[in-house]
Length: 113
Image 1: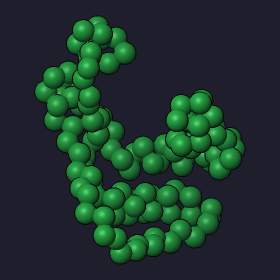
Image 2: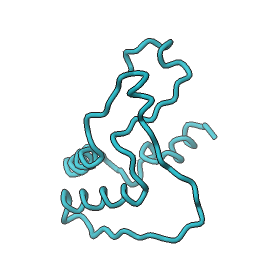
Image 3: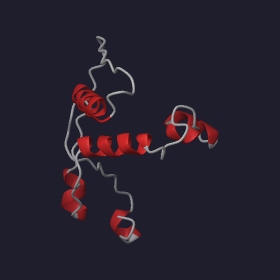
């Protein structure tokens, strides 16, 4: 996409995802993958709470494929494995404190409110 002319992308909004999952599905996939890849790190517990939030987070990536011909090649699980390996090899330093890993904090630090 970085190589496409601006006229192709101008004003376009695209979801780029491999599959559509519920938040609970995402949590289960991440939990299983991290538990397998980093078994000695810490015990991970999934905790659910009742919510009155009825919003749907169902996302379709059909538009990006239809208009730009882009299809993802990697699954969520593959991405989580990559992240686990990056953590283990020290490629993500200070991940719990560095502002760049927190969306809200990064926006605030940039002065974009």
